[in-house]
Length: 323
Image (cartoon, rainbow, N blue to C red):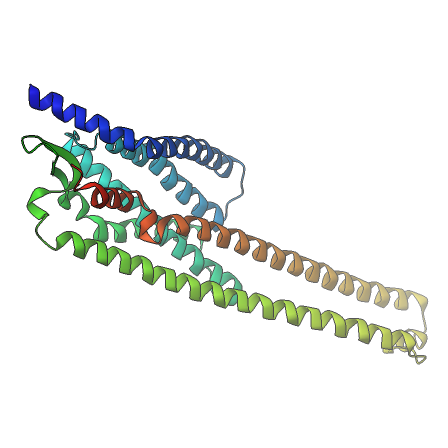
């Protein structure tokens, strides 16, 4: 009985030190749940079918799970630094946190590949909407391969306190794995995977930016040459071939038919050029939006010091001698 009261007292003292973190995570949880629900509703019912819509829905769903499941777990962990007895919940939620973080990173990689093909390889076969969905679920399968050790390594972890007769329990590395290197191998592999994806993302978006700049330069040069050519034709006193041909026609009706045909061809050409310009601008805008989403999401995922698990790990290292 005395030990239980002493443990509760020590736990309460640690909770007071975590008040700031608890408050911050609570605010982020409310904002995240509200914002992601809004995104899910809008993109599910009001946005037209497209690959960016699919990717944003997957990212929003993953982030919603993080806010609705992962963040409450962090709050529980921060409020029970010495009295976390739910071992099964610890294993499941540690796995969920790792899995969602890595899945989000893989979806960002798929987005970059899709944008690269749209901008740099527009004449090649593109990723269809069905393939985009398959790629996202395939990313989940790959993430399972990398994150399955999480529920094995995490669980019942004893913590020494200032009272030698009192031992706390928290959700961290299982006691049987504390003196092994498995945890280090696991984290190193995840960091290498994240860093590798970061490098690929930088390369792909650099190539995309280079292609867009070159296309813009070529379009501006083409427009300039077109205006110069038009000005030269206007200043030319000799009739253009079309006018010369019309003057040689015997019947006005035949001339009208040819003129109408040429105008129809010109209208189609103008309409095609207008649609091409609009489509190109739409691709550029979508690419910019997806790039900004990638920067925002990856900033939360990498470097590893921003993830909840590593935040708790730093807290443990900082305070392990205080118990």
